Image 1: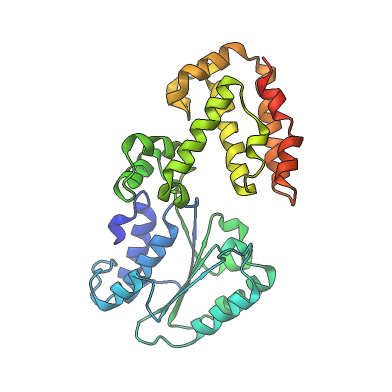
Image 2 (image 1 turned 30 degrees about the horizontal axis):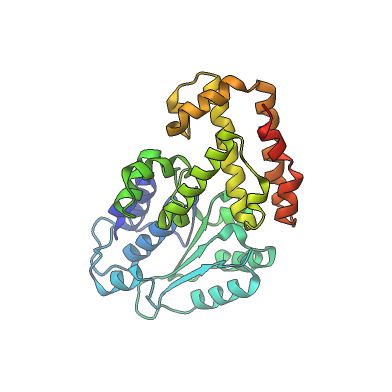
Length: 322
């Protein structure tokens, strides 16, 4: 992999290359933008360029021992911190990072630390990291990855170079899904519509699961056979996906009813069914359904039983009314 593999982020990549070529590397960076937009991959490429034995115009050579080790995330001077299965990055995790960053590099020019999911730093962890950013070791570069820069402490943001990553276009997402993941153009086109400006790795690695869920759900909604009980055993995270997909379905019916054209539809391949629903459904009922789905999504953010919450929604009766 190289900078050339980072698609849709030309401005961010160019800025990082120029900073190396001009010798204006900052001690800390914040990479922020949509999930799956290429922030982590770019951070790895930046770490390679910083420590490359033969960089050219701020880009790594990709073949020297340093580049090869960093590409495999196995370089002793590359530290990667992630939240894993936890809901936050705590003080103990950051203490380990601070200790490692404070040590001189074993063999590289820079000790590079990538904190992926920096928006999940606890208050204690943020305060501890801030002290390091205030007095950074001269041989270290810390890269914080977050979806939103304003979700981090202002004092942390003020001590780092902020690099914005744009939402990927549907065209770019389709090309990544076909070229990197080997997904057919037809399936990639559908997945791209639901990608929210980035690559969803779980959907890209197992597209059939998502596509089958979409097919079954949209068919049930179109035929009026949706049953809440079909989703009783579904984990909360998957239930959120179901609700999001429901919302796109009724959003498309509204778009079709407003005659905005096929380019406005997420379920463009289901336009015939959408048109039937649009013709036979009132505006008030459509707005009532979408409000119910949004309400349910908010409820599922809390510590609630998914089965009970889905039945509380009363969507089954509402969706089957004609």
